[in-house]
Length: 113
Length: 116
Image (tube, rainbow over all chains, first blue to last red; front, side, top):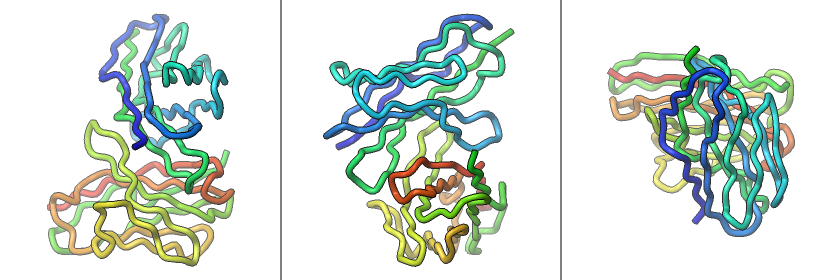
């Protein structure tokens, strides 16, 4: 079946540190891949996405590349800020079904000044 | 961007009562809405998919008589937790698509239900 696995958190970093949150997936066919962010007390927001292999999604300094050979979609940011503290969810969406999102378990990021 | 709003944002109820949670798309018509449940420190679990004017499609293991979903208009879907029990306490999140089931999804801010 389809599934998404993220690295366990929490991840605690100092401001301006480099961030990597690992995400791997299992899916049939060619899914679209997403990163969502959930700030404290708010709903999920789409951070970035990639719809085919080798695509790179980017937004707000975050990047992730769709790697089909390693079935991965790791999230990276070169220099994190305190305001990046949130829960990050990796997700996939099969292109041929009703559009349901399958989420990873979420990774909490804490950035300290 | 598109806005999806949920109400109430939090609710406390007594065991055995029913609770209704609303999900509204504020600036677009949502032909498809999804309801998720999020347990503490866990991922979102899809409960059901609702299409305007038709019956919701429930995921395996989700009791449709327990979690009633109504998508009566293109801007409103409701989730009613019937005869709530403490194990139903959770964070419920809706998402909506304005372009059918495969369009971009927008999420509500979530509703936290606590059953005493």
